[in-house]
Image (cartoon, rainbow, N blue to C red):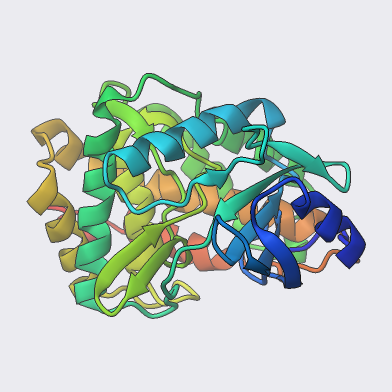
Length: 323
């Protein structure tokens, strides 16, 4: 479970006293995610609803970035995107503190996060990502990508001497790929604010329709096509990265292109961008694998699942994958 900070019932009740949410009935930690502490909160008698997500921001989320995230969600919701807004307390404050951590009470969206999406769901997710990119065209905010190429070198350095804890082959894979991406990473692609973490568990589905996009805490300004590459690496493989699903790939890409056309430059860059996406998650998972506290209620994610994706993308036999 992704719960790093303990919250008692008394703490939760006092926190909710400043909201129009009614009386606390129950709350429980949410298993998904590794970045923050998340709780499903249920209340009764409130004006703002009866189910919420309470997020306590930990680890990589800089509190300075929270106003950007909240403004982005408000903007997307106003443009018709299905995203959860932060609930303001009676004083109009969205970002507060609980348990010594910045905390936000977030709207609960109906829907299910799928572990094995089908092509129709992948198509819907691709279309929803394109709609997000269109919706932010007039968003004034921006944020540098804190998990870009420079950070991958930093993560690799922090894992040095500890790769054996994961897989003996991983050090050479990471070293050679960093050198390749340093030489080939595209620099002049169309930019916007991107989600940067649109895994299946961050897309809520009702049947084959997207009911919500969630977890925007890696959102930043970067290449739109890189966002599509991240989503492709997350959606189009088996969980362990051993099996590529061409039907999911075709559906995801078709869904995106049906709502937003890719330029020739973006199309040509995708084979490199997907390698970067796979390396980014290999490295962040490797760092978490090595450094997650023993007493944290969180399930570590296997870095090799994305290392296998990286090797697939880097295989010359896949040169025509995005043609």
